[in-house]
Image (tube, rainbow, N blue to C red):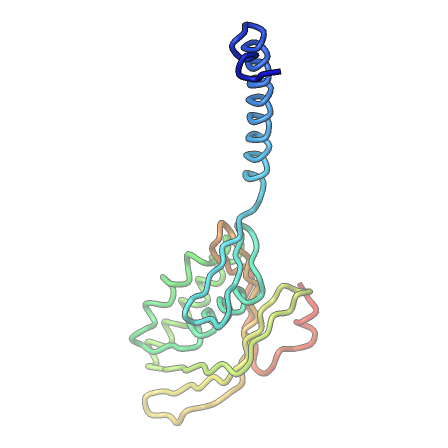
Length: 193
């Protein structure tokens, strides 16, 4: 049978239209399935900021350990490196990242400490030595040396650990819990969530 001759007949045109309708219906169904699948799939954003040696993945509500450890180190350095001149910059940088449940108590405690730093002309410097992420408790531990000095006093060195729980909310970090302890991470604090 000659296809060109068949398609020139009325029956051929009707058969071609039926096949086209069926193909259009199949294309509409596959497009709908692709749209539903794409809208349900959580997109992961891969970042490689200059402070990281390897890429980290961030999704709308979760992130990998590298992302959380980087933010934990940022929070520890922000809170541990204070001078009377930089004290006013710490709360505005920290407030948008605090979870609503801890916002007021953490804000009040930090504001009180910063006022004392300014009043007594104290300076602290935090030198991180070790950081790790505990998967079971979803906690970042940043341990280092805190050096505190005043106007006329000799610097005092002490070991300090920042314990931080960091969640992700719309791709942004959210500080859910913070605890600052003298010394290394305590075993009882590592097991609690």
